[in-house]
Length: 253
Length: 253
Image (tube, rainbow over all chains, first blue to last red; front, top):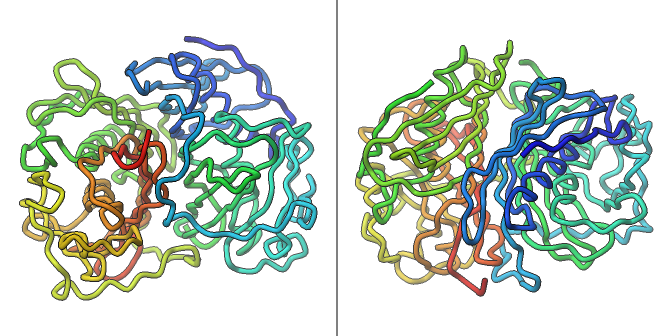
């Protein structure tokens, strides 16, 4: 299937579209090519950052199954491949509950009104137009980087709301897992941290309202960093998880 | 590029090839189609489990870059797609060191000789032929499931050695991240836990010898579980990380 789409200049960081925003567009197009409504797993490798403007998403169903289907999706601009992704679509149960969640990090994120809003013009010197669309509020204990005092833990925690507080659906969760500033900002400020690979799992349909996010950096080496992300809905239910590998200009190559 | 390959019946679990073993084959074929020697990121969605025997790996370079190239790889058997993967290949520095590793779990794995070997005929009732090829030895504190006494933490820790103690290269690390029994065995025994999606990052070239592995289950819900995996070489250096989503028959759907 071919879908014509448009990258909105408002969803950019330093003029380049956010990786999770692109994956959300691709995940939505991929699921629409199957009999299933929900993206449950999506993996993307980023080839070339497109500019705001028209793009084409080409999807191909790899397997149509009874309980899940797999789709390949490519985002192109002017015929040039920009992002390649694999998507597994399925139907998330309307009502489910964790059978066991003993391996999920336990975090204590303060109420949203006690968190600190991240402005579009932050300390990294990059214009984050994205932050004029969405509302990110950080736990004050992880917001020190905004005043030049990172905690050194590599974690950002807080709340994410869509424009107009629109509800998150599974495809929007693919954006949520890449919406926060990098966890490395809590270690040391750097320039742009471009996503090289992003994999997300959607585990449940979120309740309406903003979501809670934990963005955690793990290892910086060879000018690459990996980060883990966990997303809970407003009721505290884990709804999505992700991992990403990104480029970073810290340390030697 | 088309590569003819053979799935060895010795690398199976209940007669079906291990997902990491398949990804290692595909990663090796994908890197060979580029100017770079090392897989640094690989993501696979599993469509249909092939049988032991001949398969074809079809690779297509998506982007050939100066510092990395991206490749799509498909594993087919009798013309039927079985695994679809995206691979980023690059050159890992010969000598590098972590710039910051504050987000990596700290684990204390006992020396290999104090660990407990996992036999091919284990308590799950599935014949794990793979365990006649490789040597997995578990920290006794995480081996309770073999005696019907899981610790309930969802973690398995221990050592993994290849046949003849062959050295791990980056492609073999794609196997290492899926070689251990599922971390869920430390919660509750189940039947086969088939991998649906597997993403691995290779961060450094390992020193010769066996590797240390942490396999951790996070959330079981809707008959799916996600697991994280960390691999250190014998010197204690983190060399690979992975996440996977797998099917599991525990709880309700």
